Every structure is written in C-alpha cells, then in structure tokens.
Image (cartoon, rainbow, N blue to C red; front, side, top):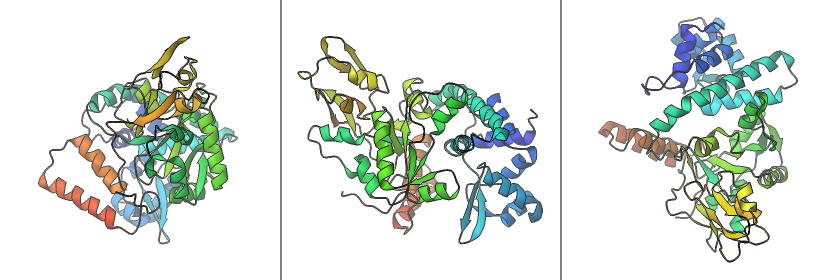
Length: 406
C-alpha cells in the first residue's frame, strides 16, 4: 500500500492536527486513508472545507480545470467519502468529518452492499484498520479530555422505564416517544459499530438494523440510498425490539435530535469509551439514574445481567443489589428488567446538564469545554453571535421547530 504525502496530510486533516498539535498520528489511519482515497483524490479533498462549495469553486482552489475535478468529486460523493449536496438545484461538495461521518457511511455501505464481492475486501480492510486506529488513539483521547465535560451525545431512557420514575414528571426531551411524535419522517440504518465488529469477526448477537434517523436527516439518508424508509409504527416496533434486546438509546445532545442509535456496550465506540476506557465525559447520562427499592429487591440478578455498563452488583439471596453511580448512565434497562418485583426506579440525577437548544449552541458549548472558558473578546463575540443566529434562524439544522416550556 503506497502512502503518499497527500494521504498523510489528509489523515492529519481528519485529526485536526493544525489545532490539536499533540494528537498522535497512528499508522493505521494513514493506511486507512490510503485504502479509501487515491493520491489524486486525497490531494483534491485537501481543498475541501466544511462549507459547501460548487465544483467551480473547488476547482479554483485546487488550480485545476473544472472538467477534471467534476468526475473525481462525483466519485468521492457516490462512495460517501465527501459530502455531496444540492442547494437550490446547484451541486455542492464539502469535507466529511471522519467520526462521526465517513466511518459510519462506509460501514452502512458495507451492509447495504454485502453481496458486492468486488467491495467486500475493501470493507473488511477498512473495518480492521479502523479498529486498530480506535485502540491506538484512545490513550490520547483519555488524556486530552480529562476534566472536560464534553457531552458529544446523550442517553435517553428506554420509554418503558419512565413509567417507574418515582413520581418525577419527565421533561419532553427525556421521552423517546415524545421525540418521535415531533417528527414525520423515519428511517432505519444498520448500526455502523456492530457492522464494523461483524466484519472483523467480533460481532455480537444484538439486532443490526435498528439505528435510525428522523426528520430531514432521514430524508437525506434515504435519498442517498443509505437508509430504509419506515412508517412511524415500524419505527416504534424496531426501537421496542432494540430495548428488549438490551440496547441503549443514544442520541444527539440537542433538544431536537435528528438520530437515535441503539447501542451495545460491546461494539459501540462511544459506550466502550465509558465502559472499557473509563472516559466518562464523552457521553452525557440521561436526566435519571437508577435506584434500588431495598425492601422489594430479592437479588434475582436480572438488573445486573442487562446493565450495559456493569454498574450493578448483587449476591444471590443477599438483597439488595448495589449500584455504582459512577458508571450508571440512566438508560433505564434495569428498570424494565425488574418487571416482577418493581424493585428499581429512576430518580433525578443531581448533576444533569440539559441538551443544547440548537446546533450552533451545541458547537459553542463543546468549543467552550474543549478550549476552556477564558476566551478573547473576539472569540466570545463570535460564539455569542452564533447563538443568536441559531435562535433567530427560521431554518432548524436539528430536529423540527420545538420550544419546550421554561
């Protein structure tokens, strides 16, 4: 495998090396980039930004004729290695983030094209190299996020568990069914994390096609051939099956989320950060945490067996079960498992942080945590302006327009 200078520079771009000076550059990522992109493609992608540009604009940046650039961009977009989007009828392209983004698209492609023998070796190599990259980058991630409450995603309790919330009235953003009711377009996609592990022979037996998107993101994924459109009824049935299989609801850390993944802690990259690598600040726990009703517990062990974080311990015939609150993410699965004794309920988490109101707020919140609160006047002004624009804009980049009660 020939790894060119363009491949190395593109790998650095995926890791934001320009801003994160101390981030390591694993060989696995260089190999993965060389696997997915030709040298010519990598050179062209280096001219892309997160802002959508027309073919002509990209050609000017790359100092190449439009006729040469157009087919390369089309090929990259068709393989979901960059973003291709028509805006008011004009085709545009943008740089696609590595994770989340390019990785998930390749794994979804691999499931949708599993009968394509010509591509099977590519997808297996991609999954194998990504698995290596994940393990190699985790020590740096753990060190770099220490003490920072980043909360890129959040947990929503499984719906049935909210029935046993100790008299607490759930917020609208706590309820999975309420999130569904605010949308009218749904799709299901293969879980990229379980598909990755499946390709390298480490998959689990959990349902695969139960991750999802809603609203305009669902329409986009369906239009691009990545997802299968389903009715609201089919969507609810799929999510109910996922909960019964012990999968966790993980969604955008937004008031109006666009997607809900159904995650297992053995394959999911985010949950593995919590469970295996002990990086608790990446994912926000739900508004709730579990509590045991001591006089109802008979130490049957059902709660411990279903807990994805191994946060519950028990001894047979020696109730009550014990909960490690440093590990509890408030998914509610233990509550649903204890359906006979009703010995576990949800209680409100004391350190809960609500989700961001919109996407611009989300990026501002994450930036503040990553960079620290001591900003220059210019940086503070830009963040403040972004928040105002996000709240005044008639177009929502997150889910449907929705304003919860104060």
